[in-house]
Length: 460
Image (tube, rainbow, N blue to C red; front, side, top):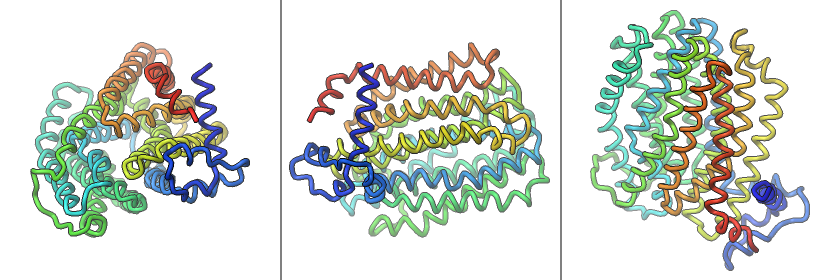
């Protein structure tokens, strides 16, 4: 009960925050700002609107959310024109390459977000070029090794997956994704989240526009549209926008960073990302092997909705990290503001899906409605996930990533072991149930590990 009271208290305390508090100069530290609340809820929308923290975080989230309707139409078309088996295989391949992309980046994109906000201008170009050099030089060997591992250990994939055309398109997707991540990291670190919206909208629009030309190419058509749509916007935005965000920037190869702390931080964050995204990569393959190709397709489409709900707290956490680096004295106030904004939007989304979820899923095809409960439970799991990801943000600020690594290892173990044991009986719903249970278990662990800090944090 104590945990729930604290969480509920955090939420309502934040709701009473006045719109004027964003511009108050905090001369006495966090405490004076934290208690500058209004007595009504009327000022809450204005508080959100005036907050740089909320704006930057919401722009990051909107980059995914606004592109979602376009991707939604794209996957409806893919489900209509291609067999369920092909859609399931392609989505699992995309999951594999997304994991490969994370491996090739070594956490350096997140390192940029952590250290670029307060680095001197002369060191900024070097730091960006260092990240760019390492990521591009590692992409080819990491991709080749990963494809060899998948080829020898995942025998479920058909022979057409290993054609040179498919491999080339997967590599194109990898390079485009990695360059785009660097662009996004620089934009987020400079509080220019609008740029991420522009890039994702352009990418999704190109992807949808190319589909009519490639729909008759059977297995290669989906990847051709996705691969081209990923690399073109990334290169365009790299050429035309990085120089505007980073003063005196010019592309050069650099193997020596201007701030060496980025290496240690990035490598720890890399381990954290690998553990976090391991389930994202392995679960589609498990569903493919344990259940069927069609169930893999249903899982992939349903996971799009769950992924969007998880992206909101992730996006807000990234913005909170940047603001905490720039303004350490406002951490408490920004924390509660982030909690309120995230919980309000997520709760609204869950209620909305409760009523219109099945009609939306039926647009993909009759069989996709079976993913309704999987999506609903997965959306509910995003609420306890919010508390976890904001605690992880605190650990990043304090450079205590070992705690994050341990907690994520526990979470992934719960999901994978629980899903494997119950999936034959519960289907893909088992995954969502253990996502929810795993997040609640982490809530409890975090609370008892940090009881004194949480108590002091809430004190006036």
